[in-house]
Length: 249
Picture 1 (cartoon, rainbow, N blue to C red):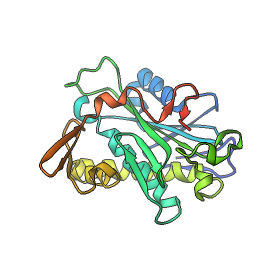
Picture 2: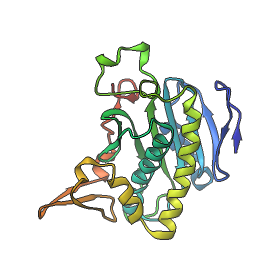
Picture 3: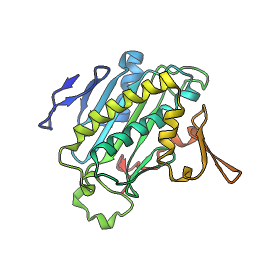
Picture 4: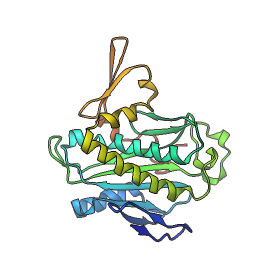
């Protein structure tokens, strides 16, 4: 679907399965998408909300899960893979993109953004949710032109050599990669998606690593097994600053 833009000179072109919804800068894509999904249920599936902020890429997409909540939460990991692929496609070559379990994206070692997952809070673990929402946020530029040296733990797209007007290109790429990843999951199972996710997790390097059906990462180093749970980490994303409702600087 082609969606006219209120602030960008280009047009947002999404795959046919998606419907674009622009939201004002005062909105939060995650909250808007969750409210829409709660109101419309499955009819909202495929809606991609994009907030009109020049300094932050803030998007969310409503999903229609087909598995019980306990296993459907793996959509968070799938969404992070699609986000990594989008950033990697448009970023400077050979710059490392890493993931801190389970939802923080780092570019060349610094926090660039992250992902969130929402679902109906009254949904039982063994029930199929009426909807899921995957949301992603990336820093496009630091607020107020802050000196990057003052906030070395975070970075922004403009600091890393991404071109101007990158927001729409990243959204389009993310949507395409998300569709491909869900097709892979449906046709071949989740193992391939898990391998792609774990390839970006430093803690999994050199380990025998897998993602179990509940979305937990299981890492084995020299016979010692470490489990990284997924569900408890989704309540409060560590990459997000609750005061600014944006990526922590």
